[in-house]
Length: 377
Image (cartoon, rainbow, N blue to C red; front, top):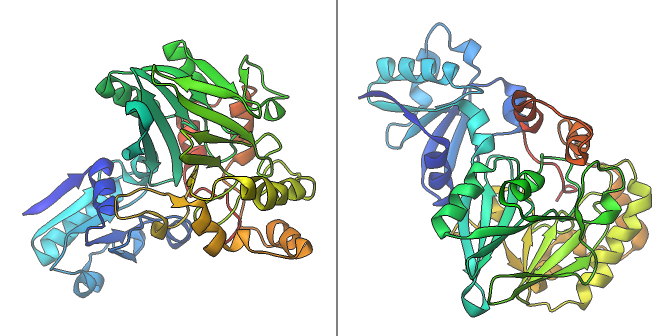
């Protein structure tokens, strides 16, 4: 009995396994409304820490006794204090999130998407606290990583576990909501770094242009990754078709929404490209392709196995962003009443260009909070 720390990795597995538990979030109301731990069977309550300094008697009756209770705060200290107060007031065992919401933002969980022809495998890395999704294609002792985040340890551990050598690091576009780990991984493994040239006009480093109809082979079994130019979120956005089964859409198409065209300040210029990609280029593709986006926004987008994916045919039937018939209505939908832009998005863009060099601590702070790459659902 008493209090016990719980790691972000353990909490992520609970959420992805759809376990039933209770979260007491003691951050201030504004932080809580902006971004929180969410899950299908997660019950959550917000009570700011400063209201509990004199004791937890005011909330004792609202704390369930029939399920696990986890207290979270920004960096750990406040949640540890409140968990201790709850254990003393109510009795029983309480948990606090080790490292706070900072660690929640940075945890990556690999989930197998499926097998590929010839013995390859495709994995989705779910950054559940941030909504970022990245991918690893492995085959014949080789690997390609797509849209990796800066938290490279998760990928290197995965490569070691799978006994594969990274050969390709690919960014589908110049990211604005998180710092890419693509160049870092490419340098670590002497791999090729791929980036769409239309997004790379201001970068300060060398790269291999990711162009339409480029084919990247992974392993002896030739798991083909075919590039498909699909602008709209950025002018260079490029989708990838893997093994003629999976469509990696970057930030163009999500399971529950579509990409926003305004993060480089060119919404009016790029909205036409976005519509062309979604309503023409993608329409010509095999409707049985499984869409794998670079982000998700809601807990409902995760399936029972913790994956974010859906057939293209299904998205054309139910995704609102794919069913706006009038072009003018579409234009207004994706350029007006957009959600707030990502935290520090301009600095993040310049970091990914290689023109700004924030410290590790600054990078962490820049990425805190939800992703905002989609228009509102």
